[in-house]
Length: 429
Image 1 (cartoon, rainbow, N blue to C red):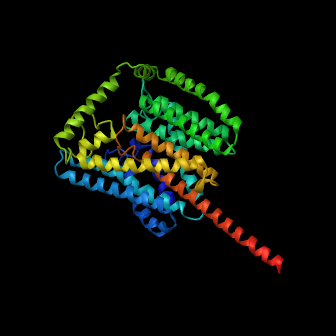
Image 2 (spheres, rainbow, N blue to C red):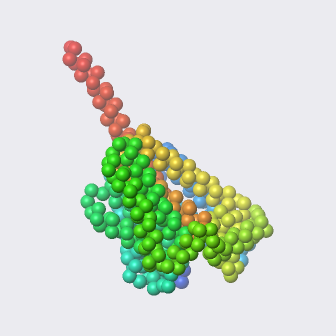
Image 3 (cartoon, helix red, strand yellow):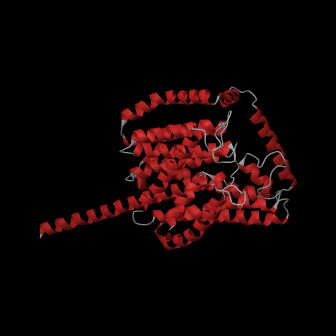
């Protein structure tokens, strides 16, 4: 039941515009998230003792922080202009309760890694399906320079695509079969990102893809594996980057022109408008420093959010809100470093979990992409929040798989070490 619910949730988050109930985007996803949250908490309670204490502590800290944000958001209904919009912030956090306990509990089951891999496959499948729909011009992709797919805004589609790229790349490098198919999937998701026309997410996605391959090259170099693959990667990386820019120039000339203007130091309209939004948002936060204007509230008729995660929470929930979201981001960043560095070094608990190691690197880049994109694009909105929580939950699950594999190896080594003296004693007698 839990696995099926998560698969349905993953399928629904890619089509928030097509899953409306009473005109609200993503309503079906929210209902599925509530259902998953209810059953996952019970499952997590039963299997929590099998989860490593680091992952259990992180899950508890993140969900506590998310719970406090939900409480603040609900309290803001008492003074805000549009009480119903506070539910946007609430549902963004609900996805954390729906995914982190569920996927962590699944990873602790026997053969749990197989189910976790299945969830990754579902994410990849949906990212490719969405990209294909956008590429052929369905789902809002009939555009002059931007496509939203089945999302409300093109930036949201861009965030989804940039979250899908590292997962496809990670599956590509560990696959023993269907590599040509996976390479095609990677190109399809990259094309979907180009068609979205989101300059911020194109940069984040391409840099994130490059970051993953750099981490993977370091991973191989430390283990002295596949030197020819490392050399080939170093040679082809500039070519791939240039090819990505040429694809953007060909399929989305306006986005390419604006991107080159920004990179050359020119003043693009989007940057100027964001600076204006940030200034207005900070002023609103300073006018209501302890309460904010209320969770989920738009900036008048100018924009639905502040286009910056920290400024958005300062504007809407004041100092308490921005403190809570800063704590959440800090916890996640510390965990990312604590997951990536041991995996690259190949020491301790990550030595033997080859497939899980690569997926730790891929999911880490997914989470990083989302956090980076939310400094200029979406501000942890309910339509994109799953693309933070699901990769983070997958990262926690793969770290737990790493530790489980290492624990099994350690037990085998202790049993072998104990058997050797016993064998010598038998020979002596």
